Amino acid sequence: MTVAGGRTEEFFDWLQSHAGVRHNLSLSGMGGVVRLPRPAPREIDRATAPTLRSRVADGLNVDPRRVVLTHGATEGNSLVLFYLARTGRRSGGSAGRVRAWMPEYLPLWEAALAAGFRAASGGGSADLAVVSNPRNPEGTLWDRREIEARADGQRAILIDETFREFTEVPSLAAGGRRGWWCTGTFTKVYGGDALRVGWVVAPPEAADDFRRWHTLLGDAIAPPSIAGALRCLDERDRILRAVRARFVRYRSLLALHRPEAAHLAAPVFFDRTEGIDTRRLALRALRRSILVAPGAYFGDPGGVRICLTRRRFPDDFAAYLRFRTAGPRGRSRPRPVQTALRGTPLTSP
Image 1 (spheres, rainbow, N blue to C red):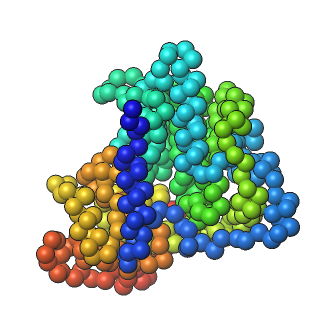
Image 2 (image 1 turned 90 degrees about the vertical axis):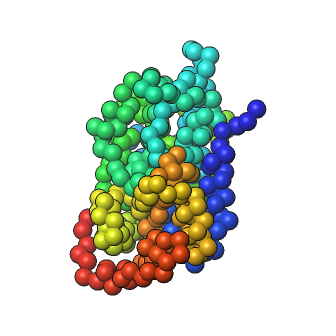
């Protein structure tokens, strides 16, 4: 038996194997950019999971009993998908059908298939929908009305809100809609890769059962991670102010060359390259020490994902533009993007 997940494995290997390139446009989180708070030993001793769960719930405007802490959004998504597959089999014998809208963060899709869901075909019915919001890799935001339309007819919808705090929009978990599951993490906007802390917000009708199920399968979060996450929440205003300002600057820079990027809600952009083999494009870029993610890793080979997170983004994006303008053999040199950023007004994301 072959388990789904081949593209996801390739994707993670692609990112990790080439992490040492000079121009890395593949990293979607703020790790190494944000000054991560360091808790004191006494804070670690006092840190508890119920305290963190309550603080996360307050920020999301949900009942703490609906919040389950995880080691990140990937773990949270997988736990939800396998739980939904299990509960779906109670009545029908099979997990059911799943729907996604490409391009999409492929681990969501492949984890659903691994859990036992089958792909919904065409316009047929589905039992589950999976979606990242803001969208990864497109960086756009679907509002509540759009999500409601996508969720219509499905038994459940899993909404990965990994990038939500780059915006000021509230979590979709706050409404407590039946069948709506939301996940989040400290690894993106807070740059908390080393913390390994995320969360699941279950819908009210499933919260107790899911919490008991998670207790059987999940390990407790380490106290240093809990304390670090609490410190992030203590300094939330400072961190979000700095991160959002950086994102807005880089978004303005990107929009000078890709006007459609002006409305990005997250620091990821799907640079569409119709008629081009994006895998070959990414390999050619790699020979110039530029790392981007081919669209095949998001279910749509019509583009490449670039990320607006690193301190060196102006230089890295300039190198990417020179590469794209030059073509396979040319050496064209467009205007340096760093100078285009001067005087750009800051606006709210």
